[in-house]
Image 1 (cartoon, rainbow, N blue to C red):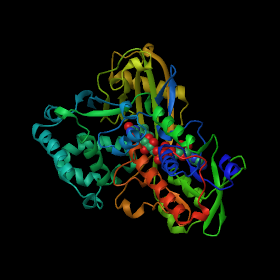
Image 2: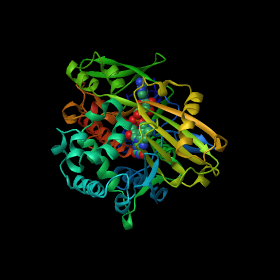
Image 3: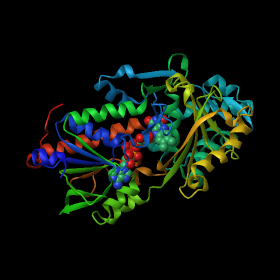
Length: 458
Ligand SMILES: Cc1cc2nc3c(=O)[nH]c(=O)nc-3n(C[C@H](O)[C@H](O)[C@H](O)COP(=O)(O)OP(=O)(O)OC[C@H]3O[C@@H](n4cnc5c(N)ncnc54)[C@H](O)[C@@H]3O)c2cc1C
């Protein structure tokens, strides 16, 4: 029995996963005095936006920032009274192509992008403007990103700029990726500009871990509990409803409602045998890429670029993100933090390598790109892997994506793969989690007999 059931004899809302979706669902329920139990195999909250310690300071395992368009994060932070913790900073974006570095932070950089002929630079600039003019994503649902990008910018712009990025990110799925996915990337990134049209991105003082912790404390202050280091293994069924969940230690937890926020392959495993085949099929059609990030802590900087897209198929990572060109190195005891990121299938050799082998494999490539770089610059390194890092958004995705309400009356699904037409991100995890929390709260309001009683109010 959980604390909530012991305290008041009524079942809480069980939330499967304590990433930003799960935390936000619980936060929304806490605001309405509804107790929750959040369960996660990880020992910390935050999920994919979780952190590790660099000299006692939390740093995201996978690079994270926000855009100006991330309004749901801003709203949540404002409700927590912590707006001063959001800091905006100008960032430099670049591209590595054919052994050369190019700055690509604004329109003038595009005009100077000598990897393309002058006419193709104009085409590239116009492509971005034309993409931003699309206001209804439904127009793009039946097209692949490749088809749409070639139509907007021509084959050479596609070959030099977009194809290596799509292949670097989606590998064998590159040509299936929907135009809707790409449209979002162009619109959101382009929309994160401050005065003078310079790109500005946002970060949280103390890192994303500090925000996750604040949300956790708010939930706990209002009767929510956390069962970290534990996985949900199944549902306890009662007709069209579930009455609880089972954990990996054999324990059962009663539930008035369940909100599942894991990746869809995990959710599908939990729902198998409880919902009709067509709902499972929709979930099972969604493919995910994994991600591996090698995080280097260096005694000096590699470059002045925060975000370097690598459009070079011989380089085994698709992005080099120098986090300390965004958040200053002083936040990490003077260390310079560099992420080398690669999206890949979980069967890929790089994903399966030992951490030490990942480092040995990566360094000669880093040296080729930055000839001055020397292994002696490395103070420490970490390797992080995420099996479910990026859902593959294909054509007509809206017809595949499972709805939030599952066929089970009191089980909802709020996962990264249901963020559409936008792409995954903590902002959308907050939006989706809160939406699920609201839906569940309304249902409980309509059935006061099963409404769990909160121990304290927000
Ligand atoms: C490389 C990378 C870079 C990114 N960069 C950014 C960025 O710059 N900005 C941004 O906003 N977002 C970024 N994101 C995306 C962002 O991290 C995610 O969109 C967001 O964290 C998803 O939150 P979630 O709660 O929906 O899912 P998750 O964080 O995946 O949470 C799901 C949770 O379910 C748990 N779980 C799994 N199985 C079980 C089980 N059986 N029982 C209980 N719990 C279970 C997992 O442990 C996990 O904690 C990035 C992601 C990656 C991979």
